[in-house]
Length: 293
Image 1: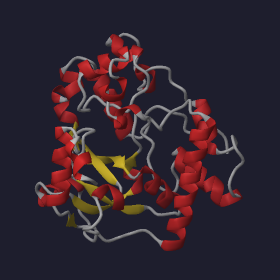
Image 2 (image 1 turned 45 degrees about the vertical axis):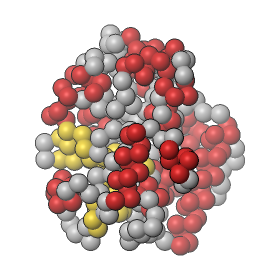
Image 3 (image 1 turned 90 degrees about the horizontal axis):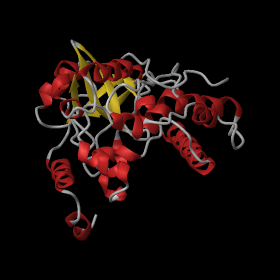
């Protein structure tokens, strides 16, 4: 990464880059340790632990878990490939999923009614949560098309957990999944930290959802790798926690709902925010659980 490019990064991404280079992750992947205990032990460092894939969640409001028996469309698509080879264009499970789940607004995507903030019904489906680090001003600017490329970072605008999606997008996603599946099946999956690679390049990265003493993990990165491991029959996988990234906090406490940025700013009512959190946590959020064999 050139010094010129780094010089143009927003300040918050500068902090992420500096932290990624200066904080070596703690490897607890061989320990049987609770995610919260791992974060506490690591202090302000990222920590690598082994987690059950069915405790991990896809990004967005769907709440799809991972694991061998998951209804996650990536996992089902790879199982389809394993059983019958690469499907023809438009016949993959992923294509059917995108065709069957096409919410028209952020409110519909997140399973909310129309009696909330008008922005929820006006915005398209976005990859934001009540705890996301975006502002109402950014959302208004995005909706108005003012500086559309910069009003929201791509991590908020690019939503892969719902349709519609053009055929070339779906095909590219299918090709990537199958290519990664074949590579990991043939070569295995990395189990040791490599200090020469960035966190996002070596292991899935997750944010910890906390409800009482229970936890679940939203994957901030590594959704394809988690899907491949699930389709290969793996029940657990190494995963990094405590990684600072611009999308939001790496620990989301349900009890702190009043302090979540988009609750505090009035985009979500408290009960709406908790409904989204619980839908993801309990793996019964939006999106069809089956779209055919």
